[in-house]
Length: 186
Image (cartoon, rainbow, N blue to C red; front, side):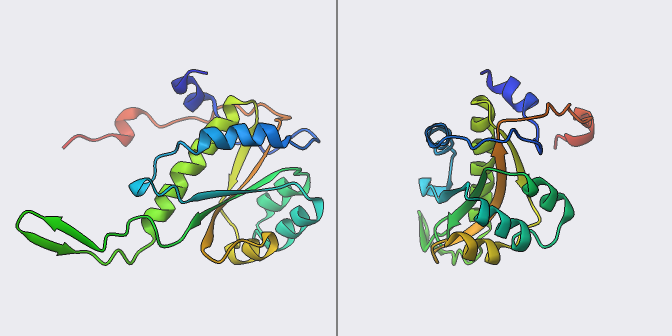
């Protein structure tokens, strides 16, 4: 699939067919998603696929802060991906050698890890789209509850919850701002 066409045609899907996406298809999608760039090539993104109905019910009940739209999407979900990242890797520089001496940087913020997870998330969604699997990224989540429900390792933090499956709808594109509204040159 052409990359530009993929970017322009990928939509958030919230209605899916009543079937589980097989593990082999998901391995292919992750095989492509793993090529997402990351700081220092640390590849901090991790994917936990959930298709157990009881676990999905717990995610619906405890993992979305009572956000009605996410509850509705999870009500019939058969497939949920939890995207997490390994903490303490991205954006960390202990010492940076410069020609005229050393520059020390504490790298205390984890914001670059979140940026890497965002790149991984979009790459996952585009790879899924290329394989005929629809996705929607849920932003209102309770990362601590999700971590407990899926048994996430302590060194990881939840970045996003993504419902995925074979689309049972074809959402149309929403209007986009004109390029001149979002672009400036300095």
